[in-house]
Amino acid sequence: MEEILTCRGLSKNYGAKAALQNVELHLSSGRIIGLLGPNGSGKTTLLKLANGLLQPSAGEILVAGHKPGPASKALVSYLPDARYLPDWMRVGDLVGMFTDFYADFNAAKAAEMLSALHLSAADRLKSLSKGNKEKVQLILAMSRTAQLYLLDEPIGGVDPAARDYILHTILNNYNENGTVVISTHLIGDIEPVLDEAVFLQEGRVLMYRAADEIRETEGKSVDAYFREVFKC
Image 1 (cartoon, rainbow, N blue to C red):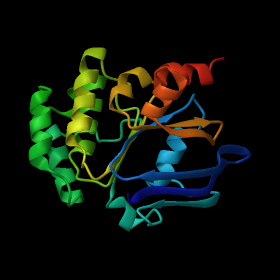
Image 2 (cartoon, one colour):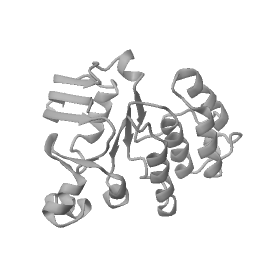
Image 3 (tube, rainbow, N blue to C red):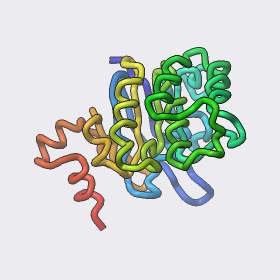
Image 4 (cartoon, one colour):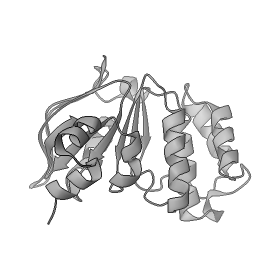
């Protein structure tokens, strides 16, 4: 199975603070992986490094063998944990922008998902609720045929009733040969779709295991095991 994300001795410092420390990680294609850890464990930093938004302080990170740059960015669909799209734009204009920017963007798929969530192409982003803005961002990210999807808190701002649909959207719209990495605190909500879980603690990989192995070996859900490992 092809390795889609490789970290070797990866470290990232912000001044005197170490956000990631000597991370060794090898993620294969065709998996849905939970990137799990408490606040400040390095989850967002790792995703930003993979997307080329930050540079490592030491070690290296590779996407399908490429250092972050134009070649890797063509393979990665990134959903940040903050709103980044211009509020004045209409939803349909954003679909057009992504169509122009990304050769692998599927506008028909985006239109289908927008319709299913009752979102209009004529709506300006600034007129939408916080949850609906996050849905638009997720739809744009999942409408690409990427090799690696990096989703930072994709369900954090949506109501519980919409989470099942959001997870259904992720599960049924990603490239089956690609890998989805989901960073979230809502482990119980995403657990049904997870193949594997990476636990981060203070910038280090505490464990990387198959979700089924955790359930079989520990006799509890990934969510319950996470709470046990990271209990205060």
